[in-house]
Length: 280
Image 1 (cartoon, one colour):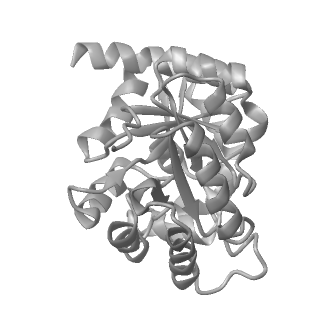
Image 2 (spheres, rainbow, N blue to C red):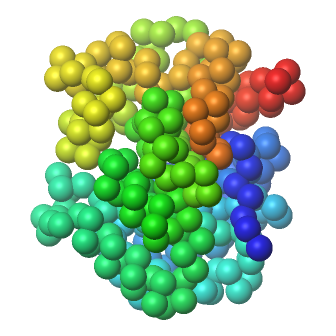
């Protein structure tokens, strides 16, 4: 049976979400809760979030190939799906050379990691890759259910869909906040992701492929780049920006909250998305 992630997902880091918060996100209308920032290989928090919800899919965005041994992740996967069948997606990624001293051969390392997972019985149709560039997107197409990229724009979604083809999942994440004070949003964004991540090699290369320049990447991001990465404004403007990913070929859009109260932000964005969906 296939898993339906819904049209919209909520991205939260481990310290930002509790079981009660997960239940609130389910009630707000999100189809998937994505557990961000390299969750441990035991996937215990993902299991607790599934225990606290009834229908919502929970996914990892993403398990880090350098820090989470594939054998432990596979055992955790089987433990979880035995209790919550058809509600868990395993997003995996390669991390960043700026963080991991052992970082080398990212393509072959991730290929080997996927091989270990599937050899341990994790179905390929339950694995997603955090794929940005063409080579990784082809790996996602050929060996997994698809891609869960972040720090991307609808233009990237359009090109990624062309590589993945029609039969693979494409579940991009996008930063968002319902806030009409553009300068406040940009200042917050520059002091946190996405601003602090602009010069990470993987992301910077992808931005250049999308037509952004060194000037856009400098000083925690030009207004043009920050505005492309963070949907902000009134509810209709935010919703339109997120729907642009769906119009470009995404199956689902995950929302990364930008601000001090991520649960409240996700609640506000959910309202905007539900209103926009009803009007389409």
